[in-house]
Amino acid sequence: MTPNRKTYRIAVLPGDGIGVDVVAEGLRVLRAVEQRLTGVLFDTVEVAVGAGEYLLNGDPLPPSAVEACREADAILLGAMGLPGVRWPNGTEMTPQIDLREIFDLYDGVRPIKLYNAAHSPLKGYEAGGIDFVLLRENTEGMFASRKGTYAPEADAVCDTLRITRHASERLFRAAFRLAVGRKGLVTLVDKANVLPSMAYFRSIFDEVSAEFPRVRTERIYVDAAALYLVKSPQRFDVLVMENLFGDILSDLAAGLIGGMGVAPSGDIGDRHAIFQPSHGTAPDIAGKGIANPVATILSVALMLDWLPSDETRRGAALIQRAVERALADPRHATPDIGGSLTTSQLTDRILEVL
Ligand code: ATP
Image (cartoon, rainbow, N blue to C red; front, side):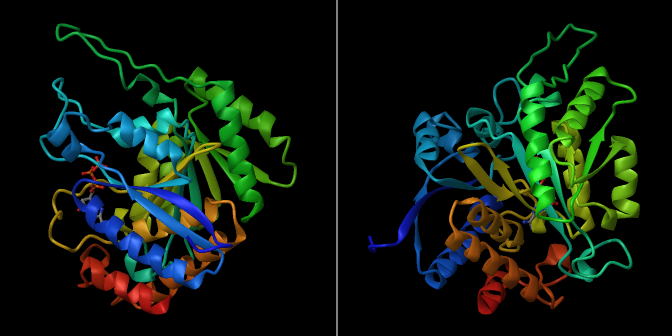
C-alpha cells in the first residue's frame, strides 16, 4: 500500500459471454488511469456471478458475492446470462437486476453521446451533436411485477405498475441535480394522459421541480418521446422516466449513437453503485474477440466520476477525453460501429491517446 494514496476497492463482476472480454479491457484502462493519478489506487476484487456461476455452483448470485459487493466502494459489472441457462420455470437469471434491488440502486443513468458522425444511423449529426442522459427509475414501475407468476390455465394475467412517492422524489431530485451541471433542461417522459399511476408520477415531478427554479422542464408522453428521440435528439438534455419506459427507450437511444457497444450505464443508490455497459452478453459475437469495449470503458469513467474524490473525477475526465479523441477517427472502430478492429485493438487506440 502506498502511503498518502487513497485506495478504492472495486468489486469486478465480469459475468458471462462478452462481459468477460469487455471488463478485461475496462480494467486495462483503469490501470492506465491509476498510473496517471497521484492520489488514488484501485484494489480490484474479482467476483464470480452469472449463469456460468449457476452452472458451477447452483447459484448465479451467491451470498458471498453480495457481501463482496457490499464491502466495495464501487462495482464494475460486465454482462450476465447464457443461452439456454434458465431457472426451472423458464425465466432468465438476472443477478444484475437483483443487485439493483438489494442495494436500492434507484437511479439508472444512461448517458447517450455521439462520438463520430459515422456511428449514427441518423444523417446530419456531428460528434457531440447528440448528447443527453436518460434516467431510468430502477426499483419499481412495471418491473415491480417481475417476480410474479401465473397459473398455466389462466386466461388473463395482470402486472402492476407501481409508483411510490419516495422512489419518484429521489429519482427526480437526481435528474434535476444532473441537469444543473449540464444544459439545465429536464424532460419528464410518462403516459399521464392514460394511466393514473403516471398522472401521479407527473404530479410528484411538478412538486420536485419547484425546488429547482433554475432548471427548465418539459413533459412529454412516451409515444411522442420515441418519435422525438429519432427526429430531434439534439433537443434533449436529461430525460427521466419509469423503469420499463427507460428499459425500452435507452436501447432506442443507444441505437442513435452506434448501438449497445458504445452505451455505458450506472445504477446508482445513496451508498452503492454498479457501473456496466448497457449491453447484454451478446451470444452472437461471444468468443470472437470483436465486442466493442467502449461502453465498458465509458462505464469505468462514470464510476470514477461517481467516486467521491477530485482525483478520481480527474481520471474520469481523462478517459472521457481519450475516448472522444480516439473515436474521432472512424477507423478506430470494432465491426458494430463500422470498423475492423478487435476488442483489444480498439482499447489500444484509446490507451495510446490516454
Ligand atoms: P440482454 O437480454 O442481456 O440485454 P440481448 O441479447 O437482448 O441481451 P445484447 O447482448 O445487448 O442483447 O445484444 C444485442 C445486439 O447488440 C447483439 O446483436 C449484439 O451482438 C450487439 N452487441 C451488444 N453488445 C455489443 C458490443 N459490446 N459490441 C458489439 N456488439 C454488441
